[in-house]
Length: 607
Ligand code: G6P
Image (cartoon, rainbow, N blue to C red; front, side):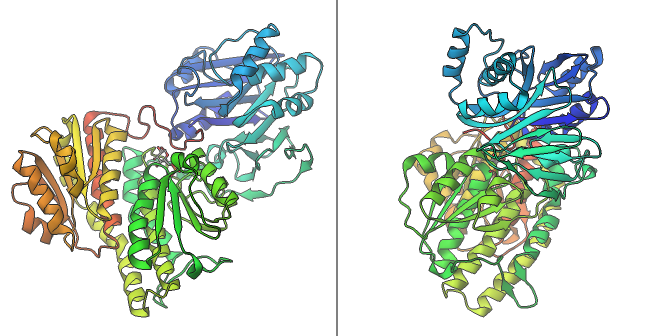
């Protein structure tokens, strides 16, 4: 989603701002822009589409200036045109914005009535005019921003530049993250620490409602009541060097390949190998007292939650409700005080999930979060923080964050089961052993990459694809379909294998590949029956199973992908790999933009 970077610097900033934007590309965007102050005037360069277009603009017409702001925009209000690209500006101010100003229509009408002229269809431009108006009336930048912020409803991270003050920037945050970076004689604003990684590691995270005035050598932070406050300066773990594709063609491929290592890394925090025990960070509530778990997430993280529902109910016998975050709040769920509400998110900033978390908190739920960004809003608002250690995930389509989420959720399931007296020491030791085997099994799964690449053409020409699975493999079918849709733009549906005969079977013909995810085990026969229903109607099946499953049911399939034989608990972690690889190779075969698929954003910070 939109990205922000701002520099109050010693030297010209345009090149560095463009570099910062490149690091924000992964969030998804459809236009971009930069503004600086030079020679007493605000200058802007903006462009539709990829950053290459903005770079061309800058080459043709360089942008001098030692202070500037920059933005990648993911369109919400108004098409992704140059006129709607940020920064938005008047003669006096220029600003960039992430989030949505919900009352912008009313503010816009008010401003038009006062004779102001608008150049874009965005919600953001009203803020530029409101601040500008106050400056034109003689207010200082601080006074202007302080007066305008309470007028804005919705969610925002803002970075504001002032024509007459080429030595300061003002940032503000409500609902969308914003960080301050402390450099050597320079100060920065960024929508995350990653954007600032090559500039500085010293980061302060603004809290909700905070706003900040930065100069080259200082950052004065105020809270929502305009009281000066200090926010801790932390050293961010992300280095500028970490974010490259290594030997891979795409970040997504690199991240798929990183999985055995990052899953092992994640599991290290949750398994005590010597004692044969699973363990969680300290918590100040009794897991054994949890009578109901409510899981809330979006996208791929939601599917990790769906797998966890199977695990929590099977192993711990705790009832689980699960919702996509955008539905949760508005259906007004019944939440008994003391229930455990579990939020799963790679970014920890997804607006719907964060709003759901706050809703659950207000209903006296214990808040547990599984997040990959330990400094994110969700991490900071949790009672129990369960980090995944996937490292920065750049590909918009989530891969390694997903399998790390599964690893944490499996450990949580075992902990819940133990706390509920449903897991003997032997059973726990067995779970620890199986989970420890997961990274090696994922490695084996990766060894089928070339085979999967070779079969990608079987799917690449399809208009529709079905994914089928049962039990915990049903969410994997949903995830497989989502991956394919996201990056190859092929319409795909995930279905519970047994449900197929209630609708999707009508779609079956020899042009609709059906991907069946079915490790051998107790549910295998049932899934195979559904698979045969497909084959009986001329459907073309790709069976993903282990050697035993393929020996039993592989005949007559268009293709098979053999996975190692694994315990059902770790099957979702292992079967995620072929599902990701298939989507990846189909997308590469189709020539789509794998890491930044059209219309998608990495971290969706608007509702
Ligand atoms: C976006 C991303 C997905 C991700 C979802 C939830 O849609 O494109 O890959 O699964 O958001 O994001 P989160 O950061 O909350 O896991």
